Length: 439
Ligand code: EPU
Image (tube, rainbow, N blue to C red; front, side, top):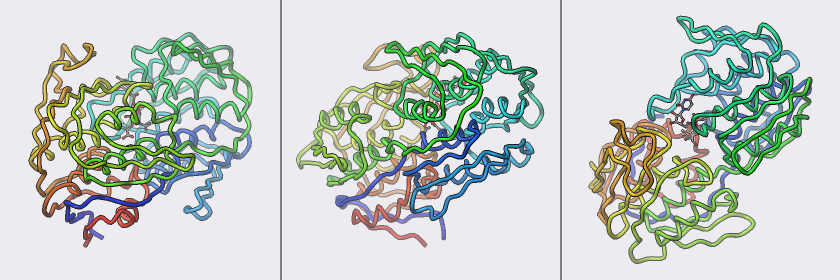
């Protein structure tokens, strides 16, 4: 099948779909299973490519992963025979994933060494790993850069330590958790990220026998233990996917019920959705997102770490803002370069201007540098169909929404990239009455 979707846009998306476990939690919980002496079971696992990639990486390291029927969402992970994988195999397998970096702590504990290849991930800024390497060094790991990647070793048991992150990085907080739980002594982490996916990872680690407390001021304290067991855990729902479909409802003038969407982790998004003019119906089963008719309202918004407005919600929301009356300002403060996808929207008729200045909010760490990280969106405009190429996961989904909202026909190339993080996209488009062809 080709990876081009020909989209006939201009009709509202209406219907019921469901979301399962969060991509950005499931992959980390799978890595956590490496730390246990007994098998673990994860449920509510979505069928997305990131899960396949992490499954392959775990298998390369000797973990037995049993998917059973993938549609059941049950994943059994048995780490009894963990071993070191060849760096070339990891490299070949990891593809665009940044997950290998999170194998470091568990492998250092279990085997005394780890390799990580050059890391991929979405092309959103440089996405460096300096914080990760700094914290691993502070636990006592020796880090050597080689031609093929990075080799780490632990000459003795890793030691708990006091850490302060320069920025509340999600991945580095996870790195610290996955390393500190089996280090000797206490680790105190300040300026930690406290995203719901991180709290769910802490819940998993606690089930395995870890001792972790979370304070209100971004401080996490971990008391290292000698051994951990397995876990049985249901992954929290994917709040990025839920919000992406919510924005599709707004942008197309539609009405989408997302079963499985959960209010608590989405409160910041839900406030914005309502401020823009969307209607919400929140129940125990999920959330109904609809466009009430008439025009949407513009707003001023800044992305931030939790509990702020997530950077991953920014791209789909921006498409909806092209339909809002007046000027909206969006200040991106998490990644320096996450507006690349707006060029395609401009090609479709959107009026979006990018600025280097920190607009509409407090100055951020990108303000004095040369990054176009503020966007001004002027609306409403009628989007028209175009030929577009998916740049990255979230930008790609936004292009898809824009194509569905636009008058006329669009060809969206590179649609496979979206399968990395969105489950059963085509089946969901069918359920929502989208009109498209895939050769
Ligand atoms: N940063 C550094 N050095 C580091 C690590 C991070 O400078 O060593 C910077 C980054 O460049 C960025 C900021 O810190 O400017 C925040 O990065 P963070 O570490 O929080 O991001 P991440 O862990 O690499 C995860 C998600 C992203 C999501 C961010 C922010 C996964 C696999 N990825 O990335 O999700 O945008 O947190 O919430 O969990 C996506 O799902 O499409 C996605 C990109």
